Image (cartoon, rainbow, N blue to C red; front, side):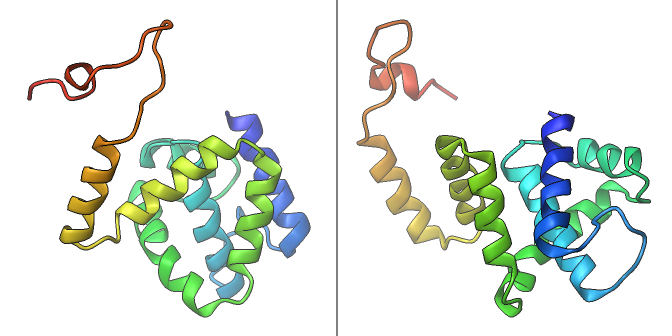
Length: 147
């Protein structure tokens, strides 16, 4: 996974000219780093601790609280930057695993839904057919285990 994440960081540098591992606080660097943290969290399913270790392994002083803040700030940066959505799309095309990309985008979107929209989404998801497991269709009992 680290090799793939390193490839994404290199690609982000190629398309943006920004090194996310550089220790500075320039606006474009912060925004690109926020985007990269979003990708690590949502497309590579890295924990905040793993994200911290990844940045540190690449020469960037970073901690898990910084990763949390960076991820939360991504949506705000995205609203005011004309480049972040374009860069995110290009990175997603690089990753090419469309199903995983869609899942990552849904995870992020769910974080910002209102409660009544969450209820609608849950009702819709309960009516959707699930993938077969070992050639057998999942039943409602199997997908909704008792809590």
